[in-house]
Image (cartoon, rainbow, N blue to C red):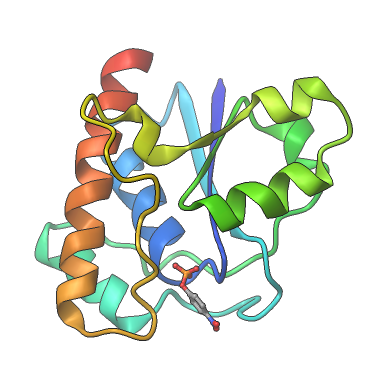
Length: 150
Ligand code: 4NP
């Protein structure tokens, strides 16, 4: 089994989408995909209603997900830890115990061949257009990740 973790701040907007999109591209028998937030703001909550809606538009159901906070043992559980932005990266690297932990962590948009933006923009305080943009970025990055791993 290959274990992949998607990380953002709240684990209600971006990383639940990243989890749902990548899961839809990989066989469940070989890959475990999960998500977490660096904060404790939304533990136990459903994804944001706008993330649920944009996923549903593309036939992906993320309503089984509940918010959780990243824990240090996630470095042991997961082979790849994809963070949505540079702030998430800093927060996760602070929790790393050694260089092995750090080597697992990567900005998800670094997977794009034309890596011009580093951060999946935080859509929480914006409108629906932000969620469409996030979905499209994560769809592109997930295609590359799935292509590499399959
Ligand atoms: P996410 O978005 O990190 O993509 O889940 C956010 C969700 C909640 C908050 C910030 C960002 N918040 O401040 O509550």
